[in-house]
Image 1 (cartoon, one colour):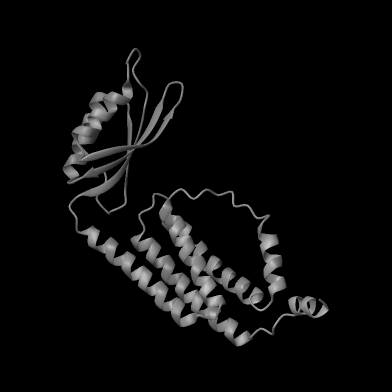
Image 2 (cartoon, rainbow, N blue to C red):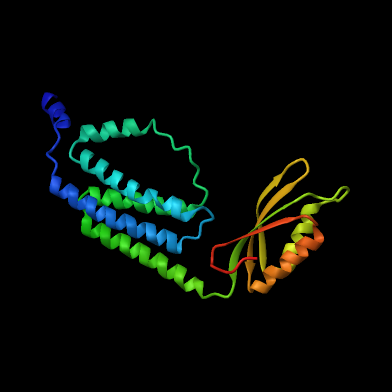
Length: 227
């Protein structure tokens, strides 16, 4: 029993040179991952701001895995320490979560001294995602987020039905993504498929004529000129 206890408490010596190499490679991969997310990502949030966390996440994971891999006692202690950590910031888009997993997997691989397999795997994953997104850029149909803010007219019934009819007349597909209803105002977000910028102009004119005083905002993820 004593020998088993000493084996758990004793940590193998760490290689500083190996740690430095993993950190350097981690920095390179983290910046590549950040550029890839900013270039090919399609989330509604600020991609540049969100991508700033990738280098910190990769390097921190490398350090943690490097320290605990040589000692079972440290790894068990890490499980207990991380059990009290709570992340309060919600991940709104599945794509954001996928990139965070790639960053964590990169740190895990480098921390385990699997540098070449990690570099090859990360490069392959990003290449496949980049090809997929690049192939979609040539499509004529584009995706937009439409956000409107308006006050329903007094006595009007079912204003959402009227709004949905206007959106349907000028888009290939309009999915309701969010609805905020206050006492006298409504904020609605649609995800639209449009083929030409002319459809956007016609949609704006129709919305303004049908709902006087409406506020219209387009968020374009495909570099299509917004109105």
